[in-house]
Amino acid sequence: MAARDTPDRVVLETIDLEHGTKRDDNRDRVTPSGQSTELVAPHRQSRRTPPWTRKLGECTPAPVARWGWKVVEWVKGPKPPSRYTITPFLERWQTLPVRLLARLPEWVRICIYAIACVVWIVTFAVVVSDGGLPSDIGGFGAPVKLSCVNNLWPSPESCGPDGRNCFPFSNASFAFNCPAGCSSAQVLNPRAIGPQVINYRSLVVGGAPGPESDALVYRGDSFICSAAIHAGVISDGYGGCGVVSLIGERDSFGAVTRHGISSIGFDSHFPMAFTFDQASAKCEDPRWNLLILSTIFTALFGIFTTSPVTFFAPIFTILFFQTGMASDPPSYSNYASLASTTLGRFLPAALAAALFYQFSVRKSLRNCKAQVEKTVLWVGGAWVGALGNYTFERIPIQRLTGNDIRQQPGAITALVIIVLILFAVVLYQAWCFRREGRLPRYLALYATLGLGLGILAAMPKLTLRIHHYIIALLLLPGTALQTRVSLLCQGLLVGLFVNGVARWDFDSILQTAAALRGDGQLGSGIPAILEPVINGSSITFAWESLLRGYQGVSVVVNDVERYRGSGGSDEGNFTWSRSDGGQDEYFRFGFISYQLFGSVAYSDFTRAGTWFSNGTWGGIPPGRT
Image (cartoon, rainbow, N blue to C red; front, top):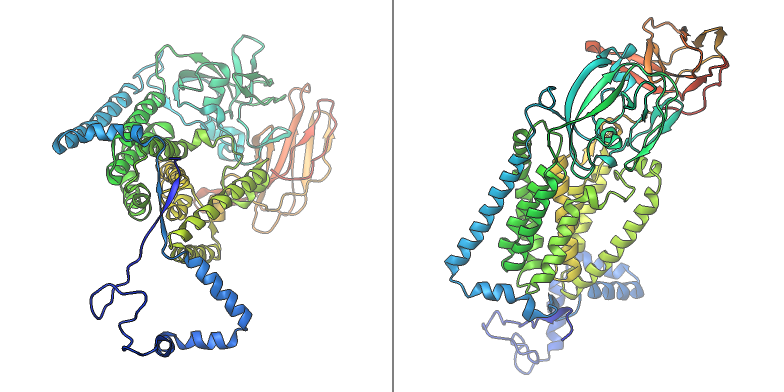
């Protein structure tokens, strides 16, 4: 027989509540003998019809009412309804593992199940322990644990005037450790590098050999781990350790493509540069060894378990700890702190998992005999969702916010494709729910959820943010069917939930504009800069009056803050003298506001105006940074 998702007919028996027997469809026991049922039915119907329904029916035109009742009856589905079950391909072979296991006594099966859980826990812990960092690398001490986006010069604003908050610039070295997969780390908001503005690419500036040696030189604001991959010190697949040496100011940083990363060129001076030294100690990221272990055990649990709870509980746990401690961990300093963070997130996640297991997962897995198909579709889909930092990496959508979708190339096209696929799946699921007679309740559920989201979206001064785990929680009820499509979608959504919570925790569904913006543009006003006065090796800038709420102007030269006005006067000026006339220099201007407790707030900055090496001023392009 061809394997298919088979709707089984459910015969509905009518029980006579008065006599306690099955009711004969041809005869109504409530109707006295010899009396026509047509005389009783209208009276009984009229008693049960609410008054508002009768009034609505009287006011509704007859054609509209007829079509309305037809739609309602269609939504309710066929009578009797059908229940979908999966008829396995090669059922004899798919059920062979569980039939062999069923020959053992029950207590033996329980022991095997418990031993399998313990073996995974112990092996996972041993592999994690072996992946610990060495206590010393090349005499530079224990390596500093870095994330993929750590750098020594976060921004001109955070480093302050002349970069004083980011000392030292030279004569310093330290050992570091990077995780795997840092070649894909990108800036997610526009960032100025001299005259360029980059976005959605690796922040690696330089990488060409220096004039005095063959060492590859990088600008101080480069992502350290991405630069280390670019230099060949560590591998992208396994991460690793190295040593960073700060070498002070350099006058030029050449662009070059190495190991799959294209660096950015900068043709002027910057006060901080660094090079790499190869580390002799071995400290590779254990995520791939752990992934092999976890994948094997989830496949075994999928093939050899028939009960939904014994299938779901260990697989969800393995997915969560694999994601939170290996495949896509949050930032951490050591494995002890990472274990603490993961456990703290696991407990509320397990509570949420128990709820969507009860109302969705259990209904899909109950009495499912397609052991191999269940493992491939559900477990495979779960791994695809849990490893979203790899599987969805090429999809050009970072966040589901309007600003991100508008500014990221290809995001609108990708979103349209995703919506079309989702729409097709929703139509199929709705048809299946109708065949099972459950469509009205699910329409009511999603109408309620939609109303709730609409209310949240209307909250003032807050923005609705749909995270990974929220997408999963919203869509999981719609997978409470035993079809192959439901198994695949359900596993994928559970994986998305795991990835979202294990990596980012239960982030709020409502966020402020500042939290969503991060280091992005404010959309604020920018200074109006007058035509500069050039006098040999010096250039003087002046600006018009300050905007309300600001007390000064900040001037950034070659991506380093060099002036921070504090007088609060309506007009001001800034003079810059160059020591070497052989390089172009780049100037950006923004407002500053001095706040309580010593903090400083910045407006957006202008685009970079260029003072060319020949002494001419190139002007400030329109736009902001």
